[in-house]
Length: 265
Image 1: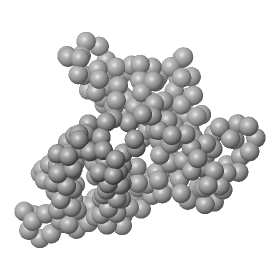
Image 2: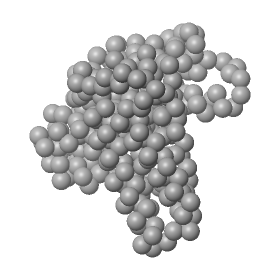
Image 3: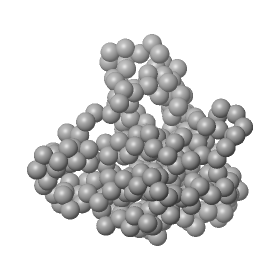
């Protein structure tokens, strides 16, 4: 059961950090609004992602004129929640449970609504290359080495990249090659690129799983179970396990900066 008061305090604290220390109190109608997110089962990490989306657009407009208020972030938070529900397979659960059939199998959950229309293949590749390059650069930074305890033991020579770092480099080079032909790719050639993206996405996720150490893996799994907890009682065991694993992978992506490489037409 979500502690609504604690949920609101976490949102308040996160927004305060985004506002560089300017405190925006969650009270009155805003408390009811944020409580509604908790009642819907919006995980805190997902709410934070929605706040980030709003702030990114807000900052892109130029110097800030006033602090960001939490109610301005609602559309982005609910959009992020929709993305999360589709990713972990609980969208169909909510609609079916509302009609009275609360015990869903993994097969039923697999029929969740399709994601929104995707970018073109070249644009998707451009974004993936940019994000992978940023992830690799971040792992090379001094700050990344300071956080090395969260990951598998680093090699004795810090100038020597770990296996996962090398895999990121290889993936960027492979995507660069695919990008060169993506604009003109049609039919079987385009299908081959899309199929390879799905396979590469899985390979990088598996490599990321291998890269993190057991304490970090355990922490991410616990966080995934917490995210799914509001829906778990209405899930069949196989569906619950599948949703937890999907939530874990989503958290793992965030932890190591992996974009989703799979692309739908």
